[in-house]
Length: 374
Image 1: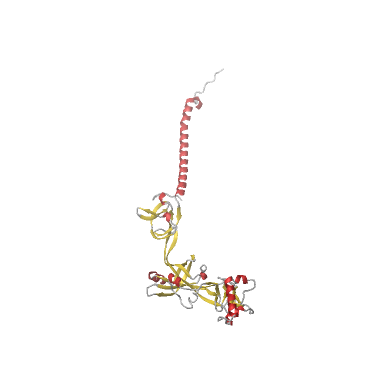
Image 2: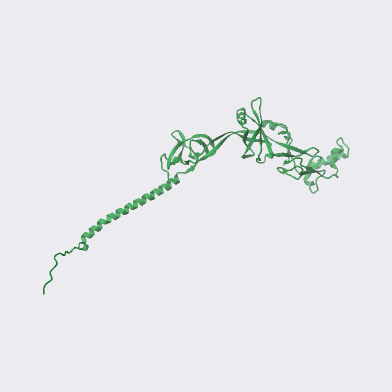
């Protein structure tokens, strides 16, 4: 039997498991590379997290706001008299007046506004006659009864019942006012009067508040009816302001009894006194508060109006002697110089920045050139 010969061209290749020491060395070589990659990934993630936290902190630390356009009104204080185109309604007879309207109510022509009776109306006698009135009534009756010098029958007709109550109808359309103050003779239908506050207080006028049940005499004023479409304000102004204000046909006034409502007014009379003061009357064609109850009042008159940008006071900053503010420009904090035009409550009216610029409200916490992430 022949023995098989070995093929000489075949070669045995040793396997990986044939050298255990080499396998251990290769594993140790790959492990540091994995750790390095893991550390790099962790550092990258930490950088992203730190950046996000920093941006969040920066946003919360830097407070900003958008500015807008605004105006500032320069005003002068004044005081003066309010007058109306008004009519006083007189009592046609002596007696007790009872009203069907109240102050501030508008009535048309011919509307029944009140009644006058010789005696207090039924059910209202106790309210209408107080002790002093009752004493007066009985004293008048006594004078007539005993034929004293004042016992003229016409003067005592109200002592005798028999006639029905007289109805008073409105002779004009307008607002009813149940006060009589003695200034009804002044106004557009006669003349405007110009007084200082001291002169007004020295005027002796009989002021009466009318009410139902009040005893009136013949031809006594019982109410006023004022034109509610126009009313007038007359005041004295110093020369320096009077000339400037009256150069314009219209003015804006803020009255003390309604300071939050500007009243557009038209100049209807201007006179200059020998002392160079200006006597000025405006006509107002709008409702401003309870203007129909007013007579002497204070008012602020606008004599100049300035325009600019309203900058919050907390955004105002002074840097190296220069007044300005920090604005956000293309993601960076920049210092911008401003000119202060006027001060208005919680803002400055300034020039030098534009509407809708974003300004920093806490400038002490930023520096110029600092990045700001929106």
